[in-house]
Image 1 (tube, rainbow, N blue to C red):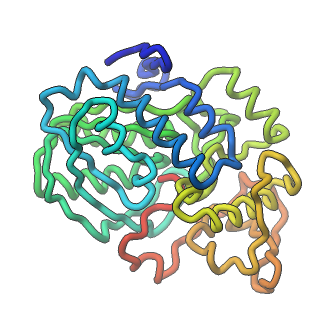
Image 2 (image 1 turned 180 degrees about the horizontal axis):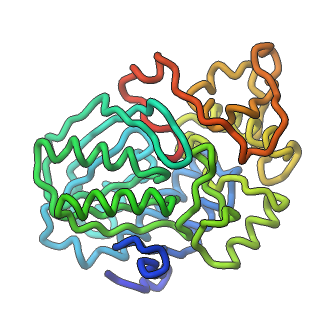
Length: 324
């Protein structure tokens, strides 16, 4: 691994976390992604690609000669644009395998995941995965399904934002299955909030630089707002939905009018945000025109984990929202 590329540095945090193969990557592009919640559409997509290119630069020396393919976890894995990053940085084509998952239930320490769609035509014993990590259950489920068809010797997991407990789950799975796993996380190995979604620099379990903690404290008035929101990737894939989710977050945290969530837009109904309902269950906002929603007082740490609707569970092509 290349520790310093000139524009990005990587540090191992295996000894600090007890998670084998876990590293943090620090660069200006990742700072843009994780400290600008108002970044949407093309600027967001470009920042994602720039961050992925930085990840690839760190492992460029390990990719030569590898039987390499991407395991693309739909749909949030699309914003990582790994095929383009590998083409630009390593000068090679990256074949892609596709897998889609759906969550059945979400909690701070676990999530139940179903694999609803898979095409593993590309094969490859060395897999490159770009995904946001919370519990780690989605990646474990995807790898388990993939291994039914192809052997896996090496996994490189590139995550703009990942939780330390999710990393531990993935590392344990890989160790038990004889897979060498290298994980590169952006800026922090986050503690995961009780709702199973939020990844905040201010969570007490987060492993990161003190400078990042202080920056997040100033940005969100000391409140542990997630660095990636409740549906990471929607900034480019569904920007209107993202703006509405920001409004819900602002409501939950008492941050309406905050410049940190300036793109927030009130939804006419919360129906379109049902997929993310477990993130704010127990403190659901009162959206305009939605008499069914209720505001329940209490800090976000008391959010009660919810379950996905039957329609959500059955939907093909719907993956864990935001973080996994």
